[in-house]
Length: 149
Length: 211
View 1 (cartoon, rainbow over the protein chains, first blue to last red):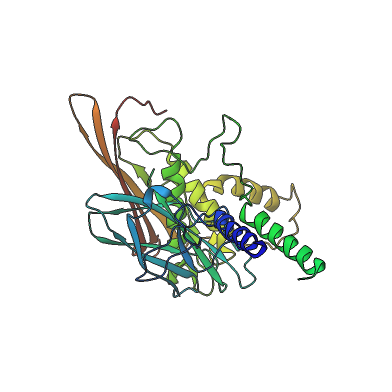
View 2: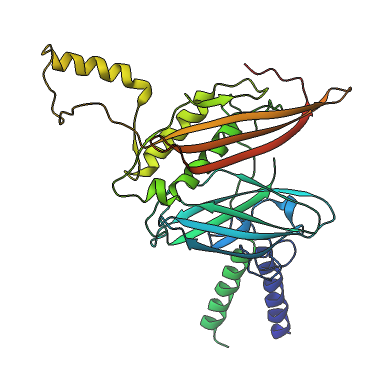
């Protein structure tokens, strides 16, 4: 009987621990990986995952796929960040993107770039590219995506 | 099972309960009302013309692109450039002060450039000439910085054009396509060493007045 009570209590605890999961029961993660469906996280409760593309707008959930992203150096030593986006819907989608650069110690080395608009025709692929200001080696980048306004 | 072990088990369960029910601690509400708006956002009043968010976004993009250009940002010695609105024309139907675009571009480039480009303040040439006259006539001393035979000459100068195309419907809906071209011209040779293009199209009721 006592063991039964303990087991029920433990089961109740496990259910309540589920409160910490997001409403869809997914472990919150932030950031996209190439070729992988982006899990929609809750940016205000999740710490920044560097070198990621994050969709910060719930309105884009399920509509935009991040096919690829990365960074490379330009001839002048600045960094160019790119993200390949795919419109998964039958409607034109307007997204805005911006990037912030961090050094090796994850300290922001400049202000975030301004929001730039990317218009994606139905079922098509588009690209977002942005350049850093500083020519020193930028350690990390963080790209944010939202609906066009 | 000992009483001590059972007590620790209860503590562990209580800790798990606390963790499970922990909220994010975020007060998800809007901030206080204010008359200030973000200059890089659309704002409450929007039309089809060139607005603050367009100026902010285009100057940011052009600045980053110029800093990635080898001729402008990786030359040794650093080239001297003039960025002003003298040769930046507004041929669009948008009413705007083009100095806002060129001033913002120059300031952002100068601050971010960190010596990769040297900016010549040609719009201040009269001011510089007066001070040089005072120094040469002996009315004032030579100052503390080095003397030069003449004011700085430039290597490259900004030129550009804002143009637009309007379409309107009988019910008051209007569309405007705006194209802004930025170019850096070699003022000795006449070649264009860098070009940038920023374009957008807006559709709305054309009932906003721009001043």
